[in-house]
Image: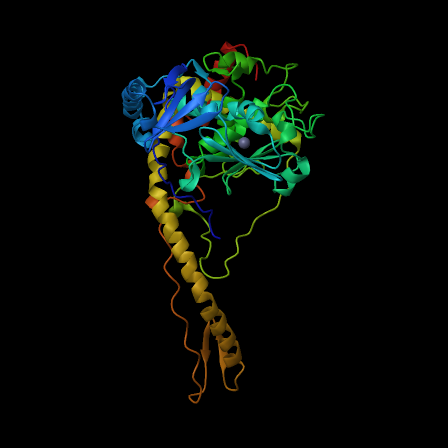
Length: 499
Ligand SMILES: [Zn+2]
């Protein structure tokens, strides 16, 4: 494959469901009463969230006349507040505000048990589907899903206009949770990782143990919570998942930096405090507990500087400085066509110490852009990405068609090459160099294969491997990297954080 394959954005279906808060008393046509929260209405069926956290679906018609009226009133309120998610969230820049805090969305934290079988269980919360390799049960799952749903809510409420959308027409985001580390590693997860969002599969994976759940069953034969659920790793990886549509167009330092940013916000009792994030950053001063990905790492990570970080474009483990995003500026154009091999240079993998400095520096740089100038530049940047991501699906479809065509031509090219080789060995055929040759009139050279399809033109002459650099000008404004470095140092100095 020449270039990575982007996914097609598919608008998820709107389902009318909305937090309407308090439980109320419901009466069915037979006069039977129960306490429950309204969980939405779909296809004439009302979802009720019972006080024990389970949900029940009942036909609207089976409820009392008063209840039916209540549902109609409140469901229409819910519908009115749900508009096209992709564009509606893009309120004008001057109206966007950083939330001061983000509360866990209670309504979405009700667990539906889809399947509980030996070796595979499926649970669903409002926005996530969890596949687990062992039974966790609805009560423990509710604890687990809290960090997932809260991160969804956090990313949605940040002023970047992102409406998290499950991938490729899926109804829910996918998470796979493994009872043992062996199962987790067998899924292809890196051996040093605590949890991972796999961009290719668009799945979040994590072993029970890292989640904060026992990795063996307790005395009663059930898994149990071991203290706090590990919100930091979940928040980091789920931030990636929530932003998956934008990731192909962002440099890796910003991708990782924003995930570190969200996962380091103070999170207590189901509330992220966003305004207090400076404090959360300061809490990471030397000697304090490391959070996020490097919770277990003892190194003192170093600030690597804006200029150095700007080169972490496509991979956090290898620096890859990109001078221009324009295809026409690319020095060595790789030959297109059958059998093209891209050279990759293998460098030794970075040490954990190096990695932790890169993640910390990504965090610092992302933090700077989240806050400087009221966060406006970063908001404008995401506005540009929002438009950028619309330009590519058509191109990627062409790439697929192009690659398929090349695959189809490959046998013809192979056959031609073989026929030419045999032909050149015929008596009287002379190689004149540069692909020219002479041959006796009695011979006929093999017919050349059809022309290879023309190379494709990506949108706006943008190098698909460098598109992550395309909109960084918006973050810089008229500034150079040196100016940004100076401003960043001033910002942190003022906050009392020494870099
Ligand atoms: Zn990450």
